[in-house]
Amino acid sequence: MCSNYKIDSSFFKSISVICALIVPLLVTGSFLPDLLVSLLSLWFIYYSIKNNLYKIYKNKYFLYFISFCLVCILSSIMSEDIFYSLKNSLFYFRIGIFALLISFLISRNIKILDYFYLSFFVTFSFLVIDGYTQYFTGFNILGYQISGIRVSSFFRDELILGSYLSRLFPLFFALFVLRNNKSKLEIFFVSILFIAIDVLIFLSGERAAFFLLNLSTLFIIIFISEYKWLRLIIFMISFLIITLIISNSPKLYSRYVESPIKSMGIAGGTDKKMFTESHDALIRGAFKMFLDKPLLGHGPKMFRVKCNDKKYFSKDFKCHPHPHNFYAQLLAETGILGFCFLLGLLLYFIFLMMKHVLIFIKYKKKWLSDYQICLLAGLLITIWPLTTTGSIFTNKLMLFYGLQMGFFKIEKKKI
Image (cartoon, rainbow, N blue to C red):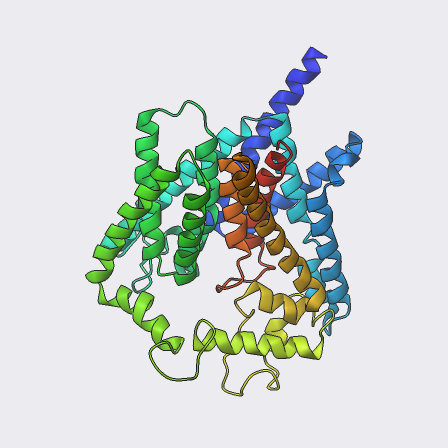
């Protein structure tokens, strides 16, 4: 018994370390992290069946996600190009399996939390060093040139540095909050890193990412207790640095202030837009697609096909692969059924937060820990409706969600 336990313990430690590699692999592109997640998911299905761990799958979050996957598959089957749509929806369930794997590993090897914390610390540190190198010299350490005023670091011309940092930062902060016996030196260096991350997200030029960073920061500062003042001080210092940068950079001022005001019609005029003129056209076109097939939509990934149809967009409109908003995309591609799953998830997360507030007001007790609140902030900004996004069927974006859900779910059981 003791020998088998040691073997299992060592084995789960190795799997935990491999899982933590997802953080740096997400920087390399979509292929390697998706390959890793697919292999780990297949192994976990095999392992759970071999060891009769069927109860693992009787999880409300997982069952909810699988139901959504089934709706996506049904929508693909009903689409005009079944095979093209199915190749994106058929194996979507692996994201849910990966989240189950993370929570399972935490229950077997709590050290996985330290592995992920170290993985975040090292990866974010490298991105900060490389990002600022690119900002000040015009090239990163591998020779990738800065794209205009937008820092991209190792992401090259993909321009998602800000999205990567802003969406995963709440999980990094949650793991920092959870750590025991933090030294003053560690808190100091991590605080410097957090300031550098805040500013680097701004320098990435991604307005949506910067908005989501501020949203999650506001959420965390309001609701956590132990590290409330630390995050507030970090945010204030970051804000001062950003103010200095934007006051001395006409191009950044134009991107973050003038351009949104002009595009959204804030500075006069009656023709108001959703986000920008381009995004407004995409969302309106997606809604027209929804009206054509309101129940199941046109099928996952079919927006890029249907956007060439002139009954949805004007003849001079440049076709896009997705409408740059999760909710608009689901309406167009999966209809009201798929849309309701995402809306239901958003309302559920808001309900959790409201319950936490009401319990605190009534009983002066915290229902959610600071760790959980940080994770909830990360989950909320991942599915926040009033912002531009990538495609909901993009592997990388859904891995952001699956990763955070894995950590949140296991901790939620401890309440």
